[in-house]
Length: 474
Ligand SMILES: [Fe+2]
Image 1: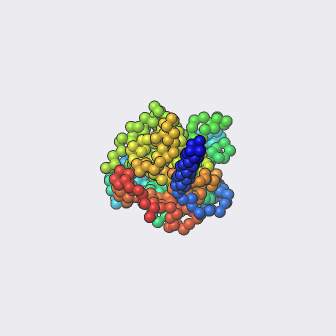
Image 2: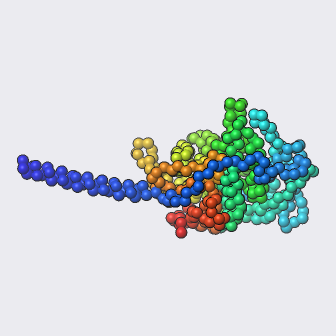
Image 3: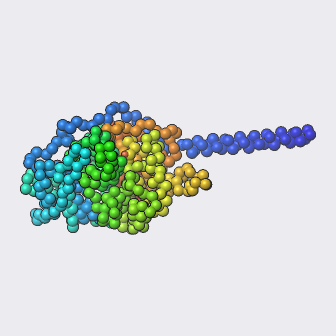
């Protein structure tokens, strides 16, 4: 009995020691696991984010009879040899013609567009013109004139270099911009950024007109006049956000995306998409896929089928950089819109890993966050493997919904910072993705409170196809 008792006590002691070791391991492991990235110590002063009043100078209507306003451009084909020019006239339809010429030539050419109008509750739009200019030379500055026959206005743009493997190109990144005083600061900071963005990848939520009574579409007009100073001169690549849905059955408006689709045309047919809400373009050395968080994306849906056919078409020997834009983020550690992107992640994340997507940019959460390279594709309901793991084949996920709209900042974060989150900060700002060659791209995020040249978060991205190694924050 004594021996047994001793033995029993000994195994009890052994058990307790083993138990202690296990617990210690768990604690240490938890310390490691819970050691997320950096939550910035910068705390932005809490201020109300309010929209600029209607009589603000940035919303000014250009002078002159039937003067074109709200001028904006975007890529007009799959490779960058075409540009869609859009503008609004209000007195009468006026001319659909765009007059254009390259800086090296005096020979003026004409392209013909079309116009549309729409009604939204008690609002009637102006005459919204869209004209695609085709067969442009790559890497060439063009001047263009709209408003032929009435008040002419002249702008210019530079076409991208021909698509190719080592072609440098600098993209700006803006999301959830709106039209507040902070929005104006974000746009100014983007314009003043010394890295000189050549095109903007816009991740959705443009005007926030739907926050006004009856979705006052006058705020779609003011927004387009506000951003004209940039988007008339360089293409913005459009992603639809939830504020583009404008679904308002209470006032009889039941056609989703009505104002957005009338105002913003994109070259979706060039990528064999059946909807302007998802499409792709090639630009310089980047292949950019734009997805819709607010259109069906489940199995067999048009968007699913399109993406399934689209990803194998990406030739990394032609366009090494594979970038995806969407509105609702998949990896987000703020207490806003938490896990709203989860169902789309479940559908598409295995493809993103399989096809080595370099980076996914999203908006929606009004703050900034950059993830580690992680994936969460092992889970199959019964195996319990539901924690994201480090994965060098996975994209970096960046939330850049910090444009500064009237809804204000998302400043409440989940704690502790989860391991998938590398850097997060509740400030307004914009980012730059500066592709140097097939292997390297320099990424930087800029908060509005800093001087124009200050970079608050930077990473050297290594291309997932050409150099799959750990990105460097040095
Ligand atoms: Fe949103």
